[in-house]
Length: 519
Image (cartoon, rainbow, N blue to C red; front, side, top):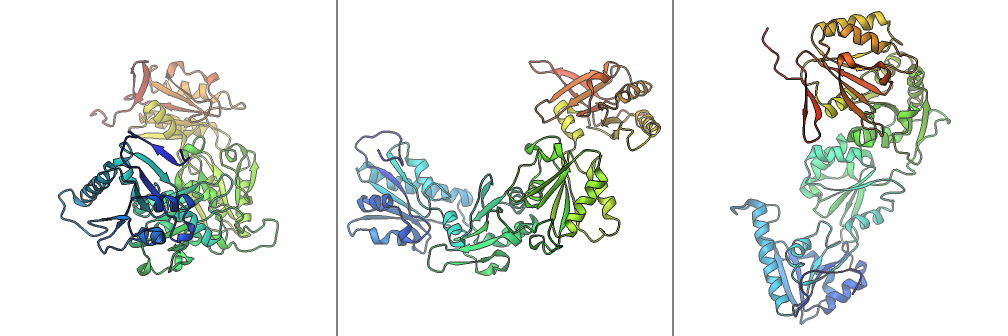
């Protein structure tokens, strides 16, 4: 059996069903197997709009015989409305069912049926609707074809994806916000099904910051082929058979940081700094916006541990440093941006919560950096990640405090703990301890016990999202400072916070009610 053959259902006296990929449009790009199947089939079926013209048939026309039985499967609707009781989807489902029945009649009579499909039969093609309805009943072979995606890349003469880059294929019919998020998060992309969707696809590219990279390809390998910059394309002249292409970023021009000051064409003529939050751990915690900024950067600057969370990309430079040189790191990043570089300052969690955004903005507010564009891109902060693992301890009012006395006196920390505890706020305690700070947790516990009951639940969350993740719930009176390190976050409940064992394993879930008792 041919390697592309898929046999399902019975293999009795019925005919054989073929889904035949024709390639992107140029008949010379049809495969040898596709031509063999078409020429040998008893019935050739193809889809068309109500005008009766079929692109699929025109591609295969040179291989049709006079004695071929042709089945034109004419859509009842394309983009217009319908009065079908099931709406647009109902009208199409009924059409596919009726079309499958027409083909089944030929197959039951022992005839072989070749269903023609532009591109590849199982890639956004109409054939798949016949396949789903017939392949479990008749011997079936799918003949793959060159996709429009491959044809577009060939016509542009540029790689789609290289090395470890991710290529995302998207339908232009997705909602604009969803498109923008996915475009921001991926390395390379193709957006199909343009036509009437073109204006919102263009807006999605602009919102994601990818419009300057986008290429436009129309009718690749066919008559009327057209390519160009998508930003320059007239939206009123875009047909359905067109694509938006964001090609590989590998080997894209990046000015060298040790060369003369210059402008970066990819950032619109100037460098910039994006301060990005990577969340509490690895890639699963990144937002689409953050992924896009990290992929687009020429330089990554950050604490070495956080930089290791970011995938390595060809052509990017990484500048790691110790965790205690925030001001120097900020100045270094801004100096790179002054020289035309796109710089991502990598921060753990959310960059604006006890992290790098403050240091960068403080430096950027001084000369000579006032004109450098700085963006702060949010990330999932450790308190939210830890709270989600435990349940919903931050369900009511809460305060976030850092127990570190490296940048403020302990007296200030203690005063704020007193104030927040006396206000009966849930407390998210960042930086509770480290190798050089071992006494603060004990002092904080003593202070909090002046305001909270000994059995107040405390979430002890270590390395949330990481390989060493451990989340436990203990009583405030039993909180052990020896079990707390710099990778730990504490959530101390209020008087209303509840800790209840539930489920087969009796795991403790913690939540703080949103309703507070009447005073």
